[in-house]
Length: 343
Image 1 (spheres, one colour):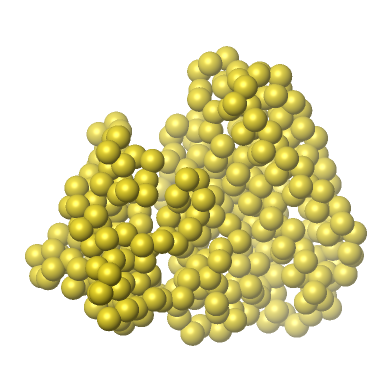
Image 2 (cartoon, rainbow, N blue to C red):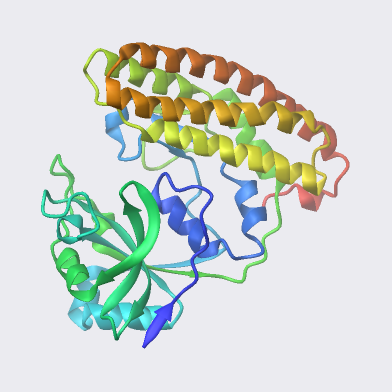
């Protein structure tokens, strides 16, 4: 028997939790309205080592376009064979996410080198080939490929649930089942305006229960902490990390797409907002690529140039997004209130 659940191409892939979500719901007619209602706010740890994902989108956990069930892996193992559980779940239309040890996975850079527990999404199986269809990074590229039942089972059974500092990570003990819903989501411009105001003012009106506000920075302040981190790289107290600039670039991709969407739907009228924002997206991408060159040369002048450019980009983005904010307020009176209220 063969099962292959659809998985859409994700417009962002810097972190798997976003790419997996977008892949599962990306075929929904409501995907664009939902995505463009959110993915506006950014946050980071002021000391990057405090978070596994030092820079990230600030999102609400609940997505109405995806059904989620989180089950204890120990409960699953006590009740049934892991392969039977995965295959039954796939047959019912659920993608299966579990944490595995990549030391046992031939596709991984950690294969046979060192233990590294990470998440893996399964979207299909082939009983004849005795393999699962999975999605993850291979050679730095986000892609879908096959792994054998035996390799998966070894990696699953040897997953660890503690970080490098010995802290217990309970979320790794869960198996998550994901399935797209048929929820009809209406674009909510009020959500965009709400998070845009927080982004521009570097604040967070939605208080998080996971971290104290004092150790996090939001919105435009993320630029400051990225540049401070690059200074630490120049003095040798930090290793270069490409993820913050990659996520910063994906944020600009999302904001540019959001402006395009709102123009197309008539929520804003000023087309110079798009022409003003497109160079910002390109320039952040250029800094991302430039950092890759630094990792080949270790020339600190490259980092100084990136920081100078990021400061200029920040000023330009502040100007364009302030205009977007004012344009949204000006256009708000043109639309029924139901188009602006968050659902």
